[in-house]
Image (cartoon, rainbow, N blue to C red; front, side):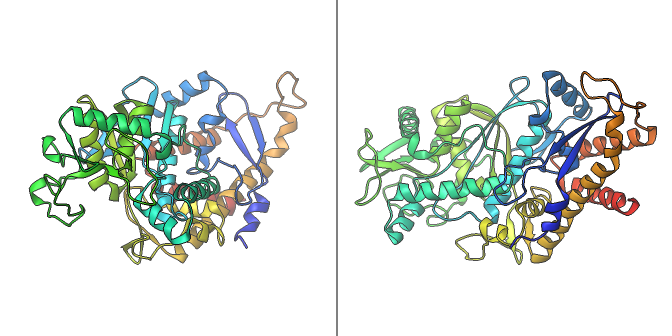
Length: 464
């Protein structure tokens, strides 16, 4: 049974305030908060109710952007290892690619943290008025999928499709907005093969017995993201030992078919893609070789993202990602939570006990780049925090409902005297809004947003 059903009951409605006119109240009925609901109004805190999806006009969007840009958005770039002012290549438009899951099992909290962290970024960019093309892929062709399918006796593509759908269910529960595109490897074989061909034509790849390998020593700045040096890499660590490779660090672009595995026709013979090439091909397909943000978990910096950079530049010298962003691990007793270590909890296991919004709150309670240690106490605290947010919204609704009869609706005359916002209230609202943006433009500092908003919510309840 889900916890905090009282929060469900009291969160019947919320209000949105617009301060540019005499007190104008816009109420909405909150849909059911049962697991699987499509409520998306709680990405960060109360201020996030002013989301891009709610703005009624381009004028509202420009006003919101102007307000927030008193301080420019700064994000940490893993490439330069410092915070930088975010300036997209195209005015008012952002291209963002985030590495998704390998779909062979239920997703764990680490996957949930990455999804929520970049959902917060996506929502905030929309809130600032940007037009965002957000791409998050599914890996549905992979060694892990094939191994699991062999264990269960399923077709590998059927198994991966099943867990892609389970992942989408988890994302809906966590109130993550659907990305613009959610491509799958199996649907983009032509793009992948075309990129491999270009890499070979540019003398950065070579064919051995139906396999295609990337020649890392052809890229002068290999290691630019991770700091890894080729001379420091030893065979058998991170990369498979294969005597056919020219360099032990060379990695597979295409794998020759083996009996019982899914395979596709290519000019090198039947086979399937290596892991890294898929993201280079799909990001280029949907965003071009130059785009603004590439994101994922910190564990993807090496080798996955390092190899992406090498592949993309080998296929197109002008390839460039402006900002590389990575979220920290979820840990269990201060050890990385992962399926290989067997110390993980799935998203589904947690949402069976706690409301999904409590889990979402927990996942943004630390800065996205910091490690986040799992504990029951932390989830209990997150549940309390969600309760206080709903209680505050309900108290606002109850307090302000008496003014509705005095507030004219569009095209009608006031039924009573016009009620204007008191100076102190106006100052409070503007202060909260400014504080929210000051923290969000500082590399999405959600932990400070939540800490400050919790104090305001408790103060409002105590005074009520």
